[in-house]
Length: 488
Image (cartoon, rainbow, N blue to C red):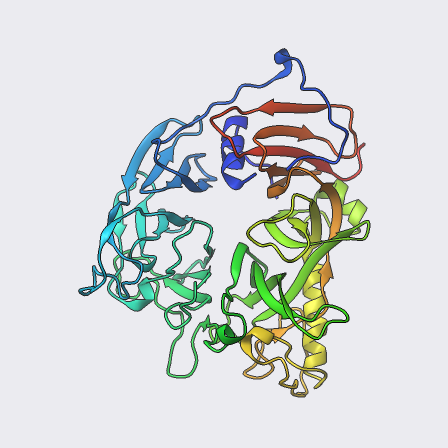
């Protein structure tokens, strides 16, 4: 991965939006004032909350999704143009939305919370999805945020009924001579009959085309989607799949999730609800979603389990870290942040860990599971789809690295957890975000916490540390710079 072509101001503006971490090192005093850097800041309207941020890698322009507004900023955080998205009259119980048909529910002035913000480079447009009207999206021209389209007249246009930011994740799969695809993953908030939890949609060239956001494939029996069965909620009434991160690599699309399940503690006859972090993988070209596989992931250090996923980011290994891990510099790594335990999704413990996963190792584990299942060994082992006890069926075929499934032995779960490599832990100031890239052969990870400070740390050489308080303007943001790998 090439070094990001952003200046410090632009990079930090990105980091400030990504989240909120601290170190296990002994506390040190802040450096003298003369050593501190000054940073350009941007503040929106007092009532606005910032939800998502994307940076155009070609121009350095920043697109900021806020409550009721989309901003386009220059790399030095000057406002270039804005687009208002709300508020408007709505009620979350209206399905279809009241803009499609009359709704008997009382309408109130409702904010539009930005839930997803993606740059469609191929068509030079911004995809901005909000909380109004069951998750309708706008397609905005990158240059001036002019509205190119706002499809709303079909049920496929309502992507998510969840009102919170961070409830939807999208991954664009681009083609040179075909329409692109948009993989959408969303919490369903108890409405599985309305919303698939994962689906692949058409991204048509024409922003006003009738087929925009239509399922890539859909007939009476098979569709490009995964739905949570309604009877799953009889076992876990508040069941949902929460999507933390998504990306594409090679022939696959991946989502990192957090989901509840019922387990029996050792020595107990009753079950309790815990949360398990899982990686979900799908083939890009799988229109029937027969390739759906999920595998639990977690981290352990010093006998302490870190199982509640907080954040993740895909990067390359880089030459230095590659030597340490025994991989190639161009191999994909997942930098992840977990908090301690499995029980408190909404109130995670402050103990947290930064862990690295080698993506190839996860794929190798998935391939082993597919091979054993197609030998007829074990069960499908995906409890939330009510298929835990369905035995695997035997078939004589070769399962290679790019196997995309058949209409058998799917969807499939991996029972054994893949453990990440812990590189850093924090016991007091919970890490909640991470971003990484390669700079001069070194893999750099920036980690954010909830405390409101900016820290720069070189983890294998602790000779210097900068602590920069960002002040009241950013009360919930902290950053930590860790250089991962051997120092030379």
